[in-house]
Length: 190
Image 1: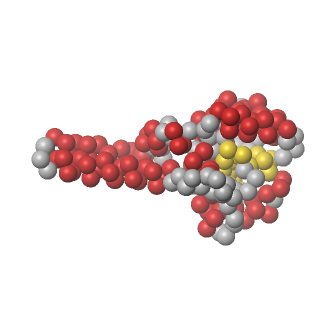
Image 2: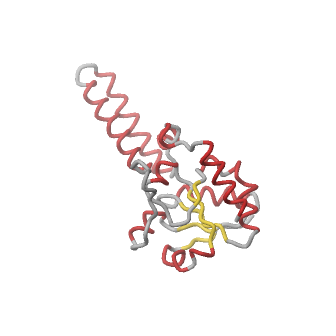
Image 3: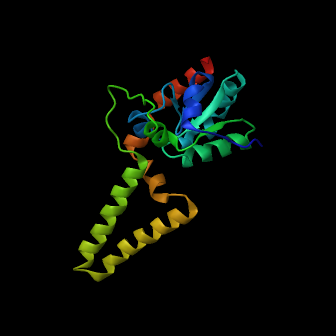
């Protein structure tokens, strides 16, 4: 099992041509802006893409895993390490990449989809407000607000997010089969 190699954005930018960059965010997040040259393989599809990722790593280019903040890419690196595939992890993800002044590619025809963290904040906030509003008339509805608050605390303590896992299943966050197939084919040609 190989440990992921942390790579700072400035280091990644200097060696970008030496990496096969894999963005493990949802297709919607990927379309909102990604590291130049990145291939989109959502975290839930990494396991099924192992043969292509192994071939890409064997062809001489180091794999660089990327997400919004570094959490999902670290999980992806763990899955790759368990399969014996070495990979680097972009520290701070695309957020740090952009904050340090590096360009993000954005398809011109892509719709602007919010990042997963922003989607979670909207959903959680809306459910809390709903629970409190309905709770003003029907007191047991306040349990919804308490449950969401508890879920957020649990999420922070475990560095996981069940709400993000649910939101990732929404149509705008799911890959089109042709899109994933094209990505895997492009990796095979590399």
